[in-house]
Image (cartoon, rainbow, N blue to C red; front, side):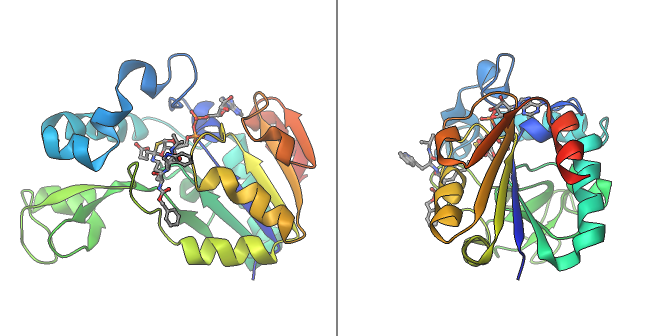
Length: 225
Ligand code: BJW
């Protein structure tokens, strides 16, 4: 069981050049959340939602992990399975930095989810199949991401890890979206020390034992080393 659980949000990828959601110039400045991040929005206008994710997938191909992602990967090299990274991000920058114990609770940009058989497959393979599910062949694919009103992935595993953790660290998240926003209280209630590393105080800063403000690319390597 992991002793340290690290929760990451859009802020950890900001210095790689990926837009956050709620900051000035964030993704929600240019899009209505109910249009692009709900099952109802997808049912209403599939093309707009696909375009929103196609653009973000194209942008992801042009960016690299930053010092914060690399520091967490280094920490995993030292701690092994004692470290679990739970990310709300759908990018793959933790993995590209070398992290292996990563839970993508809000899904993954580079995967397609078949609405017919429920199987996720690499986005590229689904597109090559034009665009049928490589598993069942039905053409009913959607981005493999968790929208508002849907249940995030691997909640049992996350809850168990938070219950057993001795340290919970939250990096680059506004604390505006549940259930992730409630992890600090769960971990603390079960005895963990809690630390927030964020550009500014988040909505949940008061729940942490300690909150440090600054850029993830500076704060995370300093915390790890
Ligand atoms: C830096 C930095 C730098 C910048 N360095 N820092 C009323 C009350 C409570 C809950 C609800 C409610 N009404 C509805 C709900 C539930 C709802 C919810 O939370 N709504 C709120 C808006 C109130 N939640 C859900 O529907 C979730 N499902 C659910 O609850 O199911 C029920 C259930 C749960 C558990 C068990 C059983 C049942 C699903 C939520 C899905 C969220 N999906 C999205 C889209 C994913 C796909 C995609 O990427 O397009 O996930 S929304 C979006 O927000 C995305 C993110 O992962 C998520 C969080 O955003 P994040 O990462 O915090 O980004 P920002 O932009 O908000 O913050 C960035 C931070 O970084 C800022 O603070 C900056 O300062 C900082 N920063 N640069 C360090 N360089």
